Length: 161
Image 1: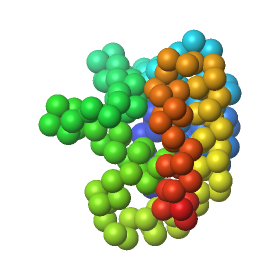
Image 2 (image 1 turned 30 degrees about the vertical axis):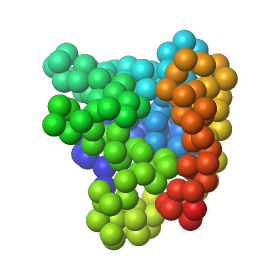
Image 3 (image 1 turned 90 degrees about the horizontal axis):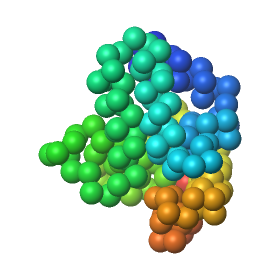
């Protein structure tokens, strides 16, 4: 279930309007919120700041939400230094490429897929990353494309790979 908070409700409402059912993963990759200059994780962080601020969060909390999203594309976010950013990085890596499955309970895969079917997520996500890479060659998405994210997405056990 989704958290029942004003910020989460707003994000879910916006995602329902602007994201395909397969791409609930990151609004910064969607056409309405894709910045022509910023990497998608930066744009997504800015959206988190907007949702938090609109929900009445203190400025520090809204900025922290933005920071967590910005950092999730880095491989060097340690759990000891930044548990929230590390958790998001681990969860999104599992979602996108099936990385670190041992960090999730064995029944988590079945529960996740029953609750949230993939609906072509891998192909849609890859298309977004390839688009980001073409337009933003210095971005983390571009680095992922150069490092065979396509192959890792194709092999994702969550997508049957």
